[in-house]
Length: 500
Image (cartoon, rainbow, N blue to C red; front, side):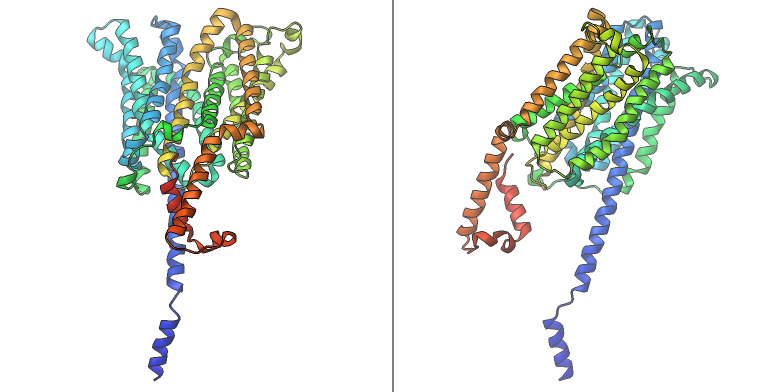
């Protein structure tokens, strides 16, 4: 009888300890996996952007010595981000099918191969007894292919990190931008040191930096991908989200804002040195580099705290556009002071050393405005809709690369035509006009209009959900629907019905 009672007690009181422990174990494992993915993302992006920029310390001088024109040299530098743009914009579907490990392996090995070939180009041309025209075209092709194939790794990592940390999109996008900025900041100094030391290695000054940097991707592929699990989408979810599914008026405005912000910031890369090497500054190349570093430091200090603040206001498209407008205001003030712009009396006010350093700090703050772009792009996207998250991450990275590519080309052309003051005047005008446009878009009525399509789709989905509930004979009171309906069922139903 006692054993019968014991059996009944076990039946009436099912054990709960094991399921709780199992859930806790799964949560710990998930968080550990998230940290590994984030570490992989940071490592890949840091190395990619350091590799992309280290040659800027010495390649312009080499190009001039080998009679490569400034225009063609600009095309070479633009080829890398153009390659990133193509991969990020059109490759999200097959990247998800390949999985994170395969994408990192393909992308980083591609980066290593074409970094090595770029450095070996002079030796290849010498061995083939080719003229200098072949050399410049090989530089262009190898740099483009390095950006094109290597972007498979960085885009896959960005997609995975943005999706896994979608509840903290502001902080994650800010940290990604910060890591990329740090890579761009440390790449040129290291490249310059390796270039100077290369003459003592027997490899030559030009080849040695490329030899060292091409080894970095091999280290990453051998250590980090093995620490993360590979996940692939279900068969019915393999198709990449189309642009028509993703694009709304609000997102179009945000993407244009992001590309223009990046282009304005990058336009100073080929032009600022001309300004700072003249009176009253007469800066050396080292001091010019420190001026650029000042803007990177201000961006790094403010970027991540700003991202965490943005996460406190999810789905607030009006606020996100206002923050982007503040970024353009900082850039407008930066170019106003740097020029100085062509307004009577501005030369006497702004043409001094403290103003220029303040302007470079403002340049960094202007880039912080881009931190609000990704949270704005994912407003209204269901958390579990990985297809749309992946597509938006790809577009985000592609537009960033477009700004990086066209900024130096346009900036250099305008400088050659109008001088630095004219270039700064046009840049400041564009920044202030963009600021006004974004503040206008941040008005509640305008922001509601821009997201009208999104809100209409969400409304339709809820109506369908309600009708389906009644069709299945479920009697749910209006004031208590959320408590009675299983949340996983609700999420699954929303994902089926909402097609962005």
